[in-house]
Image 1 (cartoon, rainbow, N blue to C red):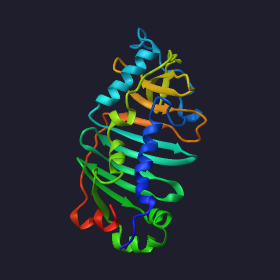
Image 2: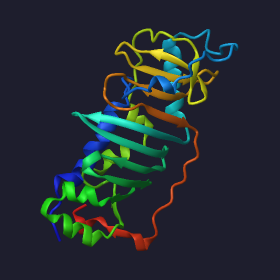
Image 3: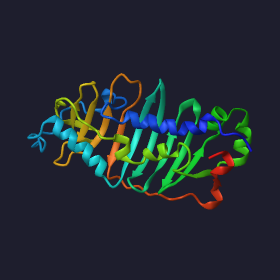
Image 4: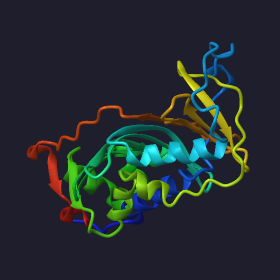
Length: 248
């Protein structure tokens, strides 16, 4: 009915923006209020015998090995902020939403190699140009079904794979340790990086990433919940339209 415009292909670019942001550099920072004003309760530090570099390396390895997780926060690319809220089951898929401010937002469900996208009205208006009304009338709020083999969709799938998101992470420098504190009610060890980013990991014998923070980027922090339960459920057939009808 209408030609595919850059807005749809831009979903892949958004995925790449998220991937580039998840390197050790991080993407934003917590406010002072998000950290406990008082030091964490005195306790034996299970990470005391490890260097900051070793702790950080273990934390990224544990993230990659996790069976499920959630990722919430914002990333920036070329001055534009994207809000991400995803539940991820590595090797199976993910589900959640990605919002692009004035460019609209879309729901995402990935199960295996099948991708379901549900753009909101603002997304069509911002990205489909003169075809926006036709797209909205055709889709009628349903999910668009396509596959990861379609143009650009493999990049979206990469957001659901921590190994691809993080890539071959190499922790450089000494990653100095800050004082143990609390973040979101969790006892954490902050680790500094040479680019001024800070990685907050659980102060446990198996360190897990809690938050990634790069002050000065203009975005919010990226918060992780490693091991959080994630359920992947395809939308009912009545709420799905084949992607070929909209150029996917």
